[in-house]
Image (cartoon, rainbow, N blue to C red; front, side, top):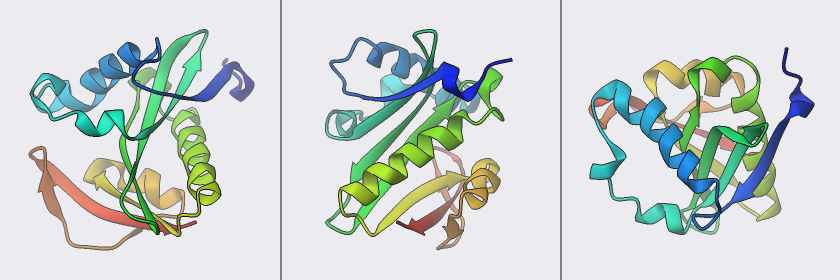
Length: 148
């Protein structure tokens, strides 16, 4: 059994050696299941966002991006954890790290576009729905937010 201390959460950037693993993770978890590919996405935000990864034995198993919106808000986006690692606290570790980052940077609020299937995860971390259902990448989402 993997212990939380066996998982290392760190900040990386697109020049980091692990960034290729992040791309593979997002492709596998976020795009392939809905019949899409990152190859067709505008990834320019990746180069200005703050990126956190969770790794086990040097392999990236989860990631989350934080995108500056304005002086008060940051957007949590591109959250992904490999299926085998879901339900083991990896996502929680990533979000908690991002929340600490947001607080340290002086943001008041984190917003996100939650896939309908992931709403329970975010609700369990204190995020609340702040808008009507909408479609993004062809699937249902809800805007959610949390004060930091």
